Image (cartoon, helix red, strand yellow):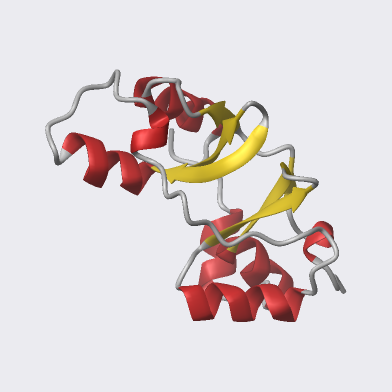
Length: 138
């Protein structure tokens, strides 16, 4: 049974520099079959951008695909280190109402842990675990 987020996280998360266009972030999301990408500034985590961020902060505001990712991302990000306990990660997600937590060492993202990752770990027979484990619908 996993004890830390390092045991369940997705290592080597998708990352993008904040000055890149949201169209590049969207293409990377498609390529990596993910809904969230770590946003870096010179290789150090600056924020996170989700498919919803692009929809709400770019498309809904009638901004173009060349909008820099840093203008669409959520800059105030809760993050954990690899040795954070699973229970603590669950509490953080609950208290901050987030679905993903970047896993960071020395300011650099080394992984990402999602609500789905934790659901699979906690109850592999739950509906959320089934959905999270299913193949993407590209």
